[in-house]
Length: 213
Picture 1 (cartoon, rainbow, N blue to C red):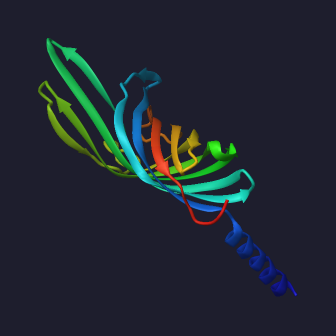
Picture 2 (picture 1 turned 90 degrees about the horizontal axis):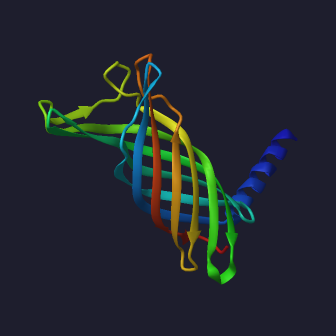
């Protein structure tokens, strides 16, 4: 009896998924990235840097207007600084490259032939792939690889946080998205140091509808 109920439930779930509104959305854009840093409670101010992101999202309809949106993105984050010391301008740029997996919960409102607007919120997990510190000017000029791990001179490999986004979808499927990514993970392995990602993003994508909406 229990086995029959389970099989029936699985059949219903499979049927619902088969009839769910599905689309695949390749997406690319820019990141205006920065990192919040505190050392022994003292805030360190950095300048934002431009990175990029590219990947794809999948829309899975739940009920009319609401959908789940998982995805996979390659995302470049970091920060930069510039200062003058004894007449010498020293510029530094930190690049951190992540494989990012977001899971958004979204709502879409259609305007018939005028397109649609959407809003989404949800968590993300980022896996650090590689990184680089680049310094121009001064005695420390050069490039250094950033390593991920558990040592004091490394950054934690796993980042996580929350994404908030809004956007517009045109009637032909092209869409634009504005997003803020708030990093919640402290990436530092040093007790009195806190380092977190924070990123504004703007992207352009296209919706490939796999079944009728």
